[in-house]
Every structure is written in C-alpha cells, then in structure tokens.
Image (cartoon, rainbow, N blue to C red; front, side):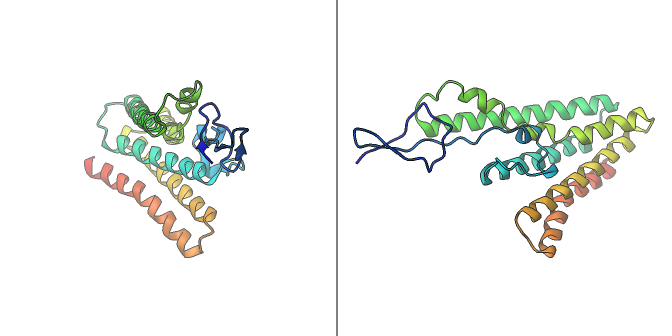
Length: 207
C-alpha cells in the first residue's frame, strides 16, 4: 500500500486519513488556521478556543519576542524625540517580522520539495503579526507620556515599565495554561519580567 500527500489540500487535520480507489492512503497536510488572536498578538487577553497547542505556543512566543525586541530598541535608542524612537521601534519590528516570515516560507518550501499551492503564500504573510503588534501598547504609553509633557527619558522608562508588566502577564498566563503550581507560576512570571527589568537597568545606565 502506497502513501501519498496531495498538494492541493492544506486545511484538513492529520487524523483525516482517506483511502483512494487505487489503494493508496491519502495523508492530508495540516496548516494551522490564522486566527484574529494570532494577528493581534495579544494571547494573554484570553485563549482562542480554536487554536491548537502548537499555534498557541507560537502566539505567546511571537508576543514575548516582539515585546523584548521593541523594548531593546527603546532602551538603546539615543533619538532626540519620542516620535523618532517610536518609528525606530516599528521599523525594527517590521524588519524582524519580514525576516521571520522569509525564513519560514523558504524553510516550508524546502521541506515540501515542490511548489506550494496558490494561496499558501498569502496565508503565510498574514501570520506572525504578534511580533509587531505586541508592542503597540508600550508604544501608546510612550507617545501618551510625550503628549502629556514628560521628558523623553521619562517617557521611555514608563514604556519599559509597561513592557515589563506585559511580560509578567504573559509569563503568568503561560504558567496558568500549563497548570503549573503557584511556585512555578511565580518563577515563570519572574523570568519573563526579568527581561524588562534588565532593559530598564540598561536604559538607566546609558542615560
């Protein structure tokens, strides 16, 4: 009995095994659906019931990675104005997202060994936006502080504190979803928040 994978179906679960008339068994490929929560990149606001385990992990990873990269740019920036800092963060995250998507698309093409179906590229390019959008809240805090008359350094430090709080919240959600004990949740939350604390210390040292 031979095994074959159809190239035209990417929306069926792996468990859906279908025998064919010629005796072959069709093993459909699986592609996790792109959900609105994944695009928003705010997984700690509530778990999406339609997301599988792998997708849920990537949602959290995208958000945490985006927060840390955005905070690192704010901490290291010596831009003269808050507006330039905000634009620098967005451009940097867009470059990171583009690189991540390029690597994922090329790797998938190499693994498949053939041209992928039409529409797959579009789905790939609408994925992973959490890396970019997770920093929208800290950026809003940054710009808001500037509009309220705060100094640039104060605005950046406030945005870094916001980032640290979001990282702690993401870490706590990870512990809750993994059914960890209270001590383990505290440890995971502290580990996530430590990245933000380190960047705050870096900013203060550079200032």
